[in-house]
Length: 203
Image (cartoon, rainbow, N blue to C red; front, side, top):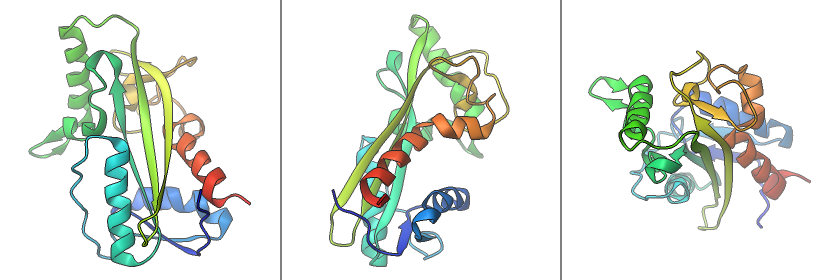
């Protein structure tokens, strides 16, 4: 596995919140982060049908355009009863003519489960795929996940996306009800980042 030896890293995102979150995670390693958005890089079209495929597209596009190593993530919710959907299309399920509506997306997921009389508990998991890519074309992939099941009606005002309908295994609260620091400690993103740090950054 290739170690990250540089001091600068491009985060392949146009999301300022994601840049802050990743920047704080990598700060202990003396890594200076900037974003694809801050560099004026275009967002590539995500044409793959896997989380890893789309993470690779974003990371390699940013690495080639900037000449620096780049880190991307692709994440989403997979429901067993729906054959893994919404999966890589998680954000698409929330799209409306006026922007993303995740309350609508959560209702859509539940109604599809109801339509096929999916047995409960309705097993699901959040995935997070991280791709660290170098300008020479090399990359490392890290897969994080958290297992749980869907609940209805939705509960909680915290988090984002599908968090209010996802209850992790062994917990009594949804991600939408949990204190954010508690959720972040057990999330799919935390799992993937722990693997990234152990593989490429830790001494």
